[in-house]
Image (cartoon, rainbow, N blue to C red):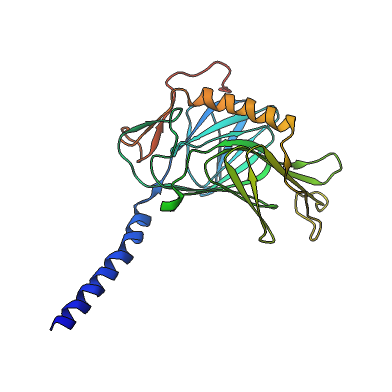
Length: 277
């Protein structure tokens, strides 16, 4: 009798342990993203219905959108987990996935040191450049932040970084990743991993098929990790300054009326020259 009781308790215990991750996974909901400091022409394509709209300050987005900036245009995207992306001109960024666990209360985006709850973010930079500022992620609880390009995937661990993916002066497609805070882990298409710590950057280039941005097989060349250039440092400093300006009044509010858990309450005032037409 004691043996049967012990076996039953063990089975129940294992079942309870297995149920915990499942409950945590199903609790995640689609996170909100707010467009801030919109300059010039910035559009968002909804992949679900193929509709396109021009973005203005305080417009909201979620996963499933592709954001495109025109010439001399840019936008700061504020994520409800406290992350921010400053997308530069002539860029295409896909928001493939952005999910968050619900949380209670409000969190100041500008003052936050870590995300308010676990989150999963997957982005794809098809072309262009951006500077990202990601709060400390609860990686031990399953949080991830990943940016994909044809060169590889950059895994963010809570840091400030810059990624550029454009044609270079030689006609090749050029890629660079620079880190100013924290560490970024670059996983190449061949599976090799290169940590890029603060103050360092890594570059790559490849030939493209005529009339496309598609990589010519076997043409990828990856340079080693080097000291960050003065140009990269200056670009990151400028972009971070714009992120801080956009973040100044933003609050992450779990209980904002009409908003999903983890929504951002954007700044209440619109700055002049924000691109509204």
